[in-house]
Length: 223
Image (cartoon, rainbow, N blue to C red; front, side):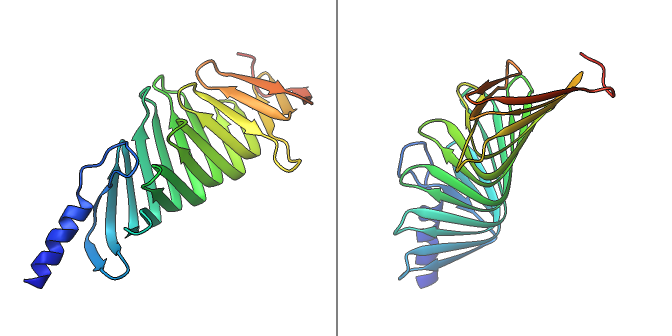
């Protein structure tokens, strides 16, 4: 009888309908579930799948802390969701965390993000950490950020993608300025305090203290 009661409680706890309002519970499934009553934690092991609003995440393991309202994910963490303007976001990383109170998500450990617009244009971003700011519809990237988009690559210590505008900003942090390299009919190297990439328009804007180095690319034809 005791085991049945625990199972029913877990089912209620883990499969409450999720939503986008703060405090809404995620739905979590896994191969194995362990309930630690006194610690107010639920441990999920093996083929973990979590659905929270429009976001789907998978991992090897997860720990849901009912006291702090936090879910920690570890091992082969993968996230996927579709934005309001039908763009798609995919994130692969080592670890992740969901703050149920604020709907915020954090990812860290060799994070790799692919942002594909509804028109099919794709941006690939590597970083040490990723923060999903649900309130601002923004994705923030921190530390050792590298980006590739068509014929452009970029490096920065901090960047931010605004989903509703399809713009990516690269910022100067602690004196380390962002750099963009472009290769087509010429080879361009650009440094500025702030660099903005317009995904749909396929253009870049460099602002404040811009330094550029442009050389002819004899290996490519101008398009």
